[in-house]
Amino acid sequence: MNPKPCDTQNDLPERTRAISIGLLNEHLAGALDLRLQAKQAHWNVKGPQFAALHELFDEVAAGLDESADDLAERVASLGGVAQGTLQAVAQASRLPEYPVDQQWGCDHVQTLSRALAEFGKLVRKAIGDADEAGDAGTADLFTQVSRAADKLLWKVESHGWRA
Ligand SMILES: [Fe+2]
Image 1 (spheres, helix red, strand yellow):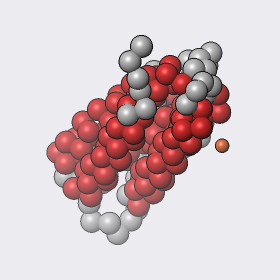
Image 2 (cartoon, helix red, strand yellow; image 1 turned 180 degrees about the vertical axis):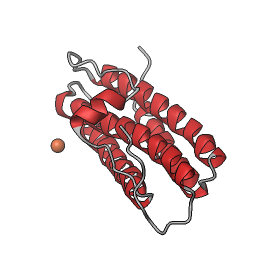
Image 3 (spheres, helix red, strand yellow; image 1 turned 30 degrees about the vertical axis):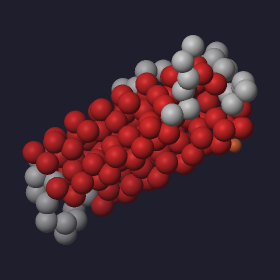
């Protein structure tokens, strides 16, 4: 899945780059999966909060698109190949599958909140892993991506309501 990094004048050791590339591709898959989950919610949401949620879910997708782009370009910067095809993403994502039969706003808010929280948790763990491998730049990117996921989670959760 992750071939040996190619030659680059980047001074990080090859082993460090290989570890970072593996981590980055893993979370690239999560970000792209989650981006499509947000789009699924954007396209199908129904209910009294339609306008607000339709817009919010698109904002979530845009935020994840930005994170995915940063993760993929860090892979390339380290001499790796970003694994961004649908097939690679489907294989590598560790997020639960999004239910395709739900429509109501409250259900989308709950499902997307859970997925954002899980993505944030997984990326947060990668901060330490990248740091341990000796790649502070990648650890910093994971910090940024997890902070962005936390903010999106806050926005989605704030649209929740008690039954
Ligand atoms: Fe749209």
